[in-house]
Length: 124
Image (cartoon, rainbow, N blue to C red; front, side, top):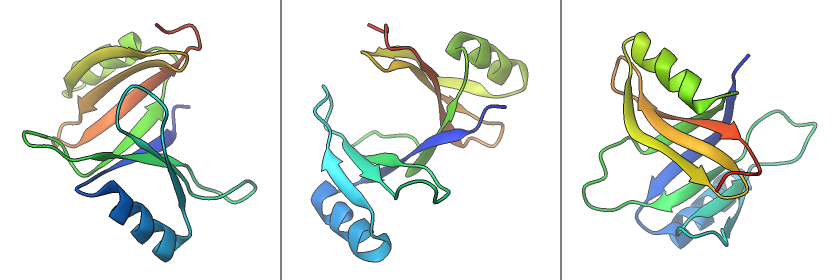
């Protein structure tokens, strides 16, 4: 069954936000070495239940919510079709995240943004 595997938080000042989440929840944040300005958030270790996430710097024109859940799916294309067939919309087209997989943003019937992610280490 598909489940939420990642969350995202948009922020104005990543360092300030990282400190806040560390101080309040004990989460660890580190800047990602990838092609975008992005911080990875670790919320704890197994066997504790929960998921990890990330944060990105908010910018002008950003049109989606401040929190985005990402759901693990076997095929982004298949699930984009399911989203649109059930009244949702594609908010941004599928992209490849090198060595990670394929990703797209969608909106539900209420306008809420969420991500769908297809793991594929061969993604380019």
